[in-house]
Image (tube, rainbow, N blue to C red; front, side, top):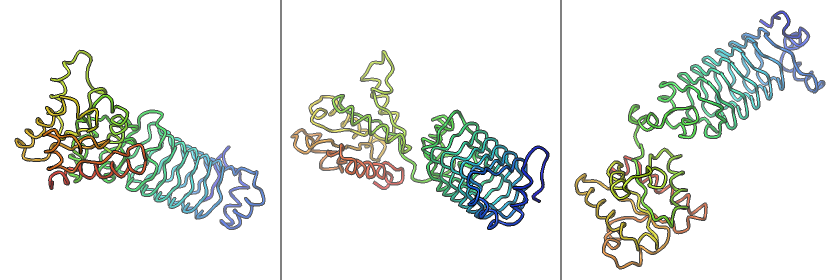
Amino acid sequence: MYSLNDNSADERHLSLLREGVDAWNAWRRQNPDERPRLRRADLGGAVLSGANLVSAQMGGANLRGADLSDADLTSANLSGVDCGGANLFRANLRNAHARGASFLQTDMRSADLRGSDLTGTTFNRADLREADFAEAALLETVFANAQLAGAQGLEHCVHNGPSIVDHRTLQRSPDLSLVFLRGCGLPDTLIEVLPTLFGRKGVYHSVFISYSSSDSEFAHKLYGDLQNAGVRCWFAPEDMKVGDFIRSRIEQAIQGHDKLLLVLSQHSVESAWVEREVEGAFAKEVHQRGIVLFPIRVDNAVLDTPQGWAAQIRQTRHIGDFSAWQSAASYERGLARLLRDLTADAAADA
């Protein structure tokens, strides 16, 4: 333990580590500008809990079985280190360079990985619960049988290319964000069936969004937020192919999705197509014996119009209220209610 490899670590720094964390941290406080040189050092099994290893040069070091809990490794060079079986509980690896590092069966619960370079890093059977990955750089990063449940900031990772997330990681971490999975390179066709593969409840139904072009700003915002929440959705301006016969294409799209999300406004209630789509949705409900039509409103027009289809909606449906959608708080409340209503379990109980 604590041995030196040729052309690597500074023997003086290794000797200081042998004296214990208290002596080491005292030396760091007295020499704040000196960067520890611990490259390729054998620190296997070392007790370094709470150690100040800020900006330490530790590339290629053996840290197998080491106790680095609560250690400060901010901006440290950890490229190629072997942390197999190490304890990095609550360790601070913010802005660390961990390219090609191996974290095999490593306890990294609540570790701070914000801004770290994880290019080519392998997390094999690592426990990453509550770890923070915000702004971490990923490229060919491997998550193999890793525990990512409760990990923070995954949706804010910087993806410089694809990474690997194996089926065991997906099974152990059922709530990984859609943004993270897409960033890792998982195709939408696979993401879409993950809940079914792993038998999860609460999966969202697929949705076709029907709206007036005058409400496109709202529709685009809603579309993006639903997609990011894991709802598979489609709407004409985004997905219609050039040359499609519009009405038949829309009708096919509606039939191909579980639910019809109808955006009601002064513009749409005055359009002839709305009545046809409402009637079609009600007919599909009779055939399927389940709820298909999910109306939401961006103003009060549907509450005031005398048209028969509108009266039927008012009498039989909760109409989601997005009338104040430009208010962030109001919009988020409406979105949360809509997401709850679109879960498979909720819709089945409707």
